[in-house]
Length: 125
Figure (cartoon, rainbow, N blue to C red):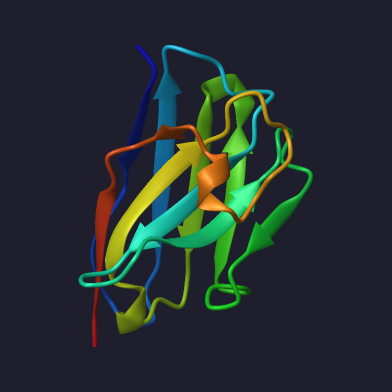
């Protein structure tokens, strides 16, 4: 059974930082792109960041460009999201997702096959 498990969320003040992790089990994702997305209360899920299979190419939503950094460690089957300079509007449940046999990153959520359960990030003002 394939599972993606996120961790690292929490409550932080505006301007603070968090590091999210997403560890996969049941299948290796070393040849697949992965992404982070988020869903704020009352809003649709939105793309945050994506990374290709070897970490050589990344892409970000405009709202997080320059503040968030996605990375991966294929030996650990884990993808990370470093969140810096957090703002109250970053409050959301953050999810990771993985493509199935797709090495190139994508900002289209429909391109992702495996999904985690999410971790809550709350930023206080």
